[in-house]
Image 1 (cartoon, rainbow, N blue to C red):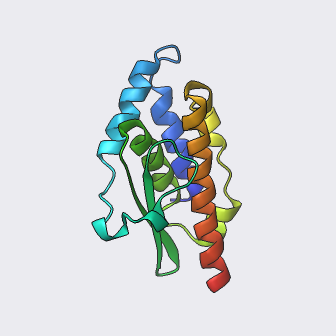
Image 2 (image 1 turned 120 degrees about the vertical axis):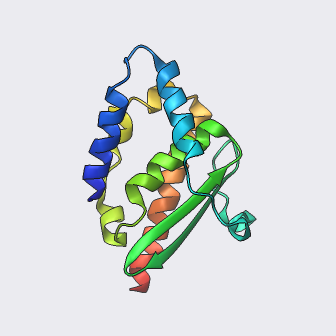
Image 3 (image 1 turned 90 degrees about the horizontal axis):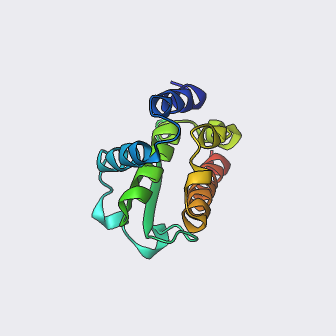
Amino acid sequence: MTIKEIQNEIVDEFSMFDEENWDERYQYLIDLGKSLPLIDEKYKTDNNIIKGCQSRVWLHAEVNDGTVDFTADSDAILTKGLIAILIRAFSGQKAADILSANTEFIDEIGLKEHLSPTRANGLVSMIKQIKMYALAFQSQQ
């Protein structure tokens, strides 16, 4: 699937919930975080912590067969759900596709306006780090 197709799928999933009931959306985010594949403990280092997040978020990336694979974890359950959505959208994609992809789907599901300012900043930091990894891998190819 393309990044856009995955993003549309995520938007569709969130549209199943009542727009006024954010408790259900938060619970869904938490559930997504629980389903996040575990990052190998050896990657839970200071070098892999995303700067700008209120909670600790570890993000590891590597290239396999021309695509960028991400693994992540967080010590906060809601933040773990946020990074799970991003990994779902971007992991297994080519670096150039990650770099050219937009993140409007986050606005479409209404996340930014329903997150605290520090969590919203953390979300932006996560996206920036994913794009930075993609840029680094693209320049190596």
